[in-house]
Each structure stands twice: as structure tokens, then as C-alpha cells.
Amino acid sequence: MSTEHIKIFSGSSIIVRGLQNLLDNNKIHYIIKDNFESARLAGFGEQMNAVEVYVLNSDQEKAESIVNNYRKEINS
Image (cartoon, rainbow, N blue to C red; front, side):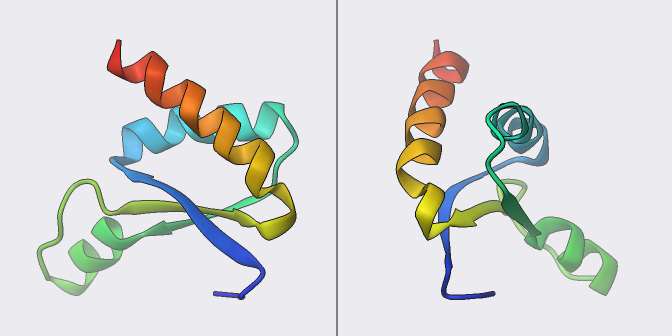
């Protein structure tokens, strides 16, 4: 993973899909690292909330605002 990217969120694949839609709508490029699926394919166990979302450092501020609003929405 490039040092130009920073992790902004981790959660289940379902929760991450909702966040992906928001990032897409705001034209923020991201990378998804799915540790759960990788571990499953390799025959190992992994936590269900092992999906991570990374964005470019230059998009961090805007992305964090979206993530914070998304967290409020899913936790209400």
C-alpha cells in the first residue's frame, strides 16, 4: 500500500459498501483491503469487520467528514 494512502475506516463488508457509495458520489478515490475475504480464501479465520478503506492523503479531510456522518447514520 502506498504511503500516499491513509486508512479512514474499517468494518464489515456490508457497512463498507454503503461507505463506498458515498465516496463514489463525492468522487473520492479509495482502496478496499478485504482481510476477511483474503483469509477465507487462504483457509484462515478472520474477524468479520476486517474490511479496511484507504483514501489518498489529499482526500483525507473530506473523506473523514463523510465517514463521521456515515457513522452517525448507521449508529442511530
